[in-house]
Image (tube, rainbow, N blue to C red; front, side):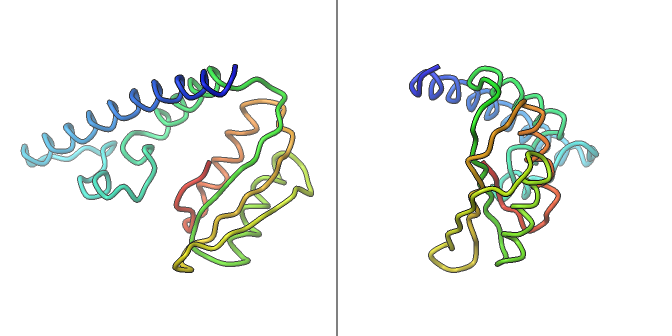
Length: 154
C-alpha cells in the first residue's frame, strides 16, 4: 500500500473515530442534562479539553478495536517501525519510553529526543525497530500509556 492509499485509509478511520467522539460527547451531554452519569463515559471537560487521546472518549476496548482495524488496513508484518512518545519529563521519561519499546521488541534501539519550544515536553523517538506482529505494536502502546507523564504516542 503506497503513502496515498494509507492517507486515505487513515482519513476514513479518523472520520469514524470522530463520529464515535461526537457520539460520546452527545451521550455525556444527555447524561448531564438527565442528572445521571455513566461509568463508561467521560466528563464533558475531559472530552472537550483534547488533552487525552480519542480513547478517553470511548472505552479502551473501543480504542484497541479502532487501532486494530486501522492497522490491518495499512500495515504488513514483519515491519520496521518507529515509536514516538511525547510527555512531561526529562531523562527519566526518555528511559521509561525506551524501556517500553525494548521490553517488547528487544534492544538496544536507536533513540532521538527533542524538547518542545517551551521546554515543558519531550518527544522521544525510538527506532526503527523490527516488529513481528500488530500485537507487539499494541503491547508497546499499552506499556507507554501506563506512564502518567505521557501526553500522546505515535
